[in-house]
Image 1 (cartoon, one colour):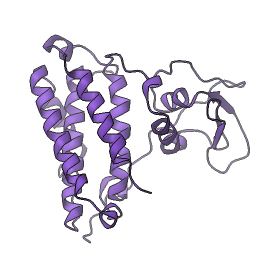
Image 2 (image 1 turned 135 degrees about the vertical axis):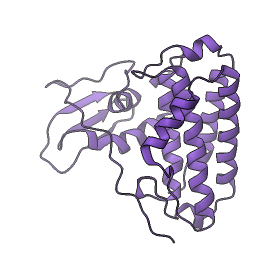
Image 3 (image 1 turned 90 degrees about the vertical axis):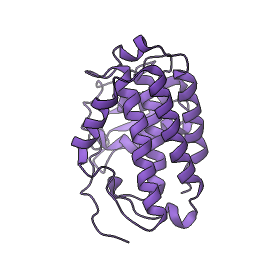
Image 4 (image 1 turned 180 degrees about the horizontal axis):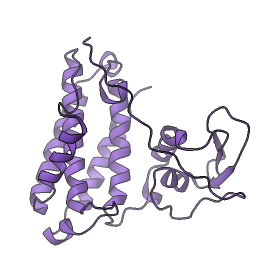
Length: 236
């Protein structure tokens, strides 16, 4: 599957417009994520772009490299160390790292997209989908006016595909606006959850839907976010 590079670039431009007028005070205010300010979210978005560019640059050379040599601890330390930047510094870092990521992707061919990366033991194309999710979901977390009903329809459908494993086996989702259904796992038919595709995606992503999905038996409890498989350590 061809990765949605153009759609992610559009998301990057939307994010840049969203934070264009952000003040230092607004950066320091809480985000929708517990314990994180808007600065934490922006620091994560900028460094996430840097990390994906690192993976891409190595994949273009036929190499595997960890996204973070120090693992999750390094990731968290970078976010904590940079969350307190000024609004202007956040905008500059976000612009620089998204530009670097887009430049790396611009050099990728069909051969490169299928090359393995350590992120989720997937291929380079999967990191484009991941960045798509990161950008739109965290724009909601910034609480600057973007809501799940602003998500592109195809992004919402993709997010459901990715997060379906959070549901008990047999659970079915019905997106009324698309006339489309998803089934979780191989269990016998169970709870049917109905709603708009964006609201279903927001619920699965742990965000607040604009119109909450409904189920006759009550909404099922969600499991954890899809785990990362053990990291690749071999070279191509």
